[in-house]
Length: 482
Image (cartoon, rainbow, N blue to C red; front, top):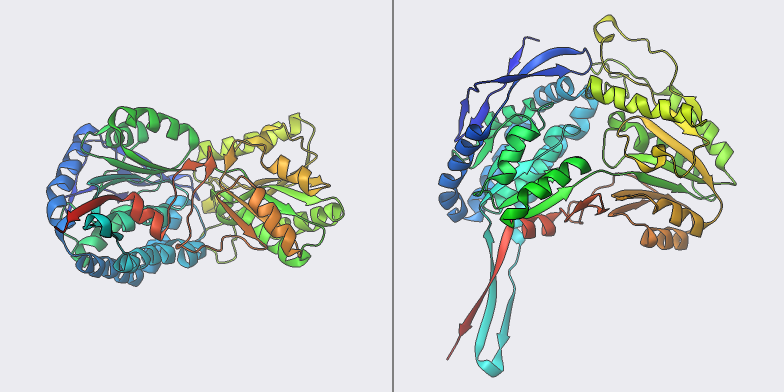
């Protein structure tokens, strides 16, 4: 594939940048795209375009906004294979995964929010004693600044763009500088679907340059960010003087709690998937596995056996379960946690085996699934987000003990619980400090239900109801009838 040159998408046009960044294909370690290194001026231009488009777009009937977003979904779906190939090049994930998860979910995001907003209701109340009538309306907020991560690029970007647009806001979005290509192509789709110029704008570049400029911009009253906890601290500080609405979906250190009476076969298969899908680079991936002592040894042996079977290799191959990690630096960081395990005397049960890669992939950022045991609760492997194919498996004895240990970290995004006892599932699920708990399953997502984290895993929720509430301001109107 020839070198791809990405352009900012402002006011419905693709705009050249004064400076560009290298974007690497994680599976080869080679530069495959040039990304705009946008600055304050680029952001100002995008915000101006969004402001100019706001009055018309916010006044457009929701039925018409819905029609356009459904057209976006249809065109994106018609180009699914193309977008999946680009997402794999950009992020390192297997092409089959992008075809079955990332791009279909992006299509679904547009369809879901385009239709659910048609059925959103306002509130009303009659005050008979005062002969007055109250009702509410939901007003779009204005120009929404949306910042999305590199792990599920189009999937998570559209989870913000779709509700923001259907609610009547205009958007200035900044995808990760490491995975910008599918967002750039989404600009083509939006133009083809008839989205008016300026309604959706993409400014590409780094967080300190483009991202911070969006967050600090006085004409961007609402910001939605998905990414790391450290970056979120900086964003909070930058936005603090402006009283902006903010939604933050941050990191996770998600536990799986497996009781003796769990469905063993289903539990093993699902936990392998929840640990290593997308190279473990999903905020909802399992990274701490607590197994009750009665089946601990049996589970550990089988889990390691299954992890060793996973094929790590060329993302183009349908046989590859895992592709490459996002960058050389991130690979070094993830491997650093394995070094910490060695230093602490933990047992590394798999992951050290050499990789047999095709010649074109030998400089790529690949890593085998790594399973570690004999780890103390105070270890950084337990307390810090690794965000890669490294999991820790440790035993527990009682329900009360495992709940306390699972809740002991600063994160609270998601968890899984495995048991054949319904009482156990409900009791443990209700006591875990996590925004989402999956019982006897993983990654079963209903967009009608709120999604978000507790503690340092974020602020706010995203869903049909929650996203519409976030991207609107609810106004009460009181009419005196006499």
